[in-house]
Image 1: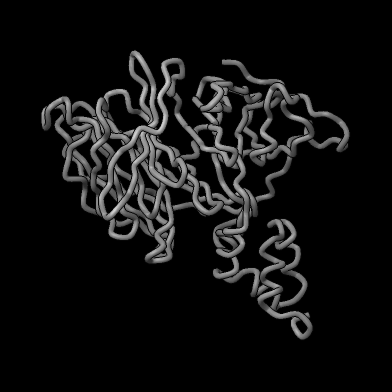
Image 2 (image 1 turned 135 degrees about the horizontal axis):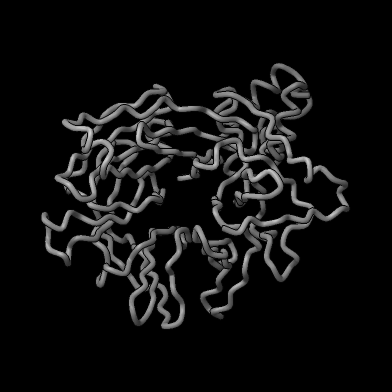
Length: 384
């Protein structure tokens, strides 16, 4: 085939194909397999992929978690019939695992209990998962320090400087004298290493990190004994290449700011106070940064766990126990997503990342979802 078609043209054609087709085409020849499996091709293919949403559900009759994948223009909105003939797959982890990050088609899945923190990297597009080594315990002088009030926050992203995927884990104490420690996992070494902790002591860090331009961002509260109340809340940052923590001052008043997102290619924060709500965007110009008010409303509340900007300019709002909504800033109109409680929504792209790494799984559909294409699937939601 390469004798008649240039390699660049072959790459251009292949990068536009879905992952399912590319996995099949690897059996055509050794040269085609090597080309599709190369890191350069995998990155090129990822750049061509359109964003999608993975929605995790808890369904009857077997009370297990499943997931469906939707493009932005095919979200299961209630006014358009909800779920119709979607392919449904079993979620390959226990219900106690949460999705805590997404980057280049890889989802970071995380569980924590009294005895440790456990991570796995998962690519649902190719049914591949990579189990990470357990996070080492921090040094502790007593059992109480380990089990009574230890909290942790995590983040996942890609370090383009060192061409490596990384997971950061930060442990801190909420009430007692702080005992903070932090580790970073790198895929190239498949190991955790201890890193320098933030210079500020924290009593609370938001659970979801925002990945932007090679760094992770969280809304964080400082220990009230260390700073004045007015300066307690700010953005905690982590550079994925240097492994250094930092901080960014929030716009005032900052007590109502709880969520981060990416809007129009910039870092943004969502604020909800007693009287109004607003969206602030951080602008970079002439090596300086400043916050500008992007949107303000006296009727809309931004008290949501996750906020995603859609290509259309609308926003997808999601909270753990409430119905997700697609919201239009200009009109103020919302459309509800057909949904079940106790689930995740995560934005991702279909890629070949993790190909040749980790282990594969079948990801079989539940028996009630294996039906004829024309037959509508009826879901029974679990109400807690």
